[in-house]
Image (cartoon, rainbow, N blue to C red):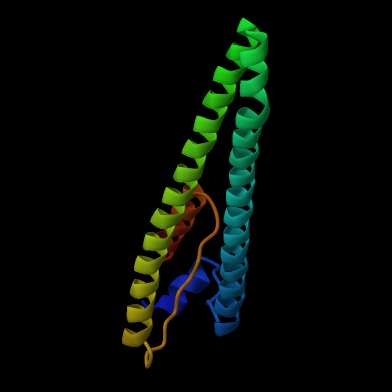
Length: 146
């Protein structure tokens, strides 16, 4: 039984070059959105850190020292804790980006090798969208027909 018969039995459409191009466009727009989101998040976290440090050093520390109020010293400790958390988030964001880039590089190298190996071959790929129960029912119906 060839793959076209399987695709027909499962009511699946063959993946065409146009489908691949549409998927590539979706992936590219997702990558651009990811990069923009990363830049925005990094810029926001950096701004929060810079403003927090400026407020802490220029305002809060002076007021707390002059007033000698325990509530102000408590506010200072909370500000320090918040700044530490923001720095941790910045480091975590950068490390996640580095991990994602390594993963994408590996996927890209696998994809480019696959393209080289399959340049002169016809590839019939099918994609089934549904639950495993639906797939199992289709396969059982197909096996009854054979």
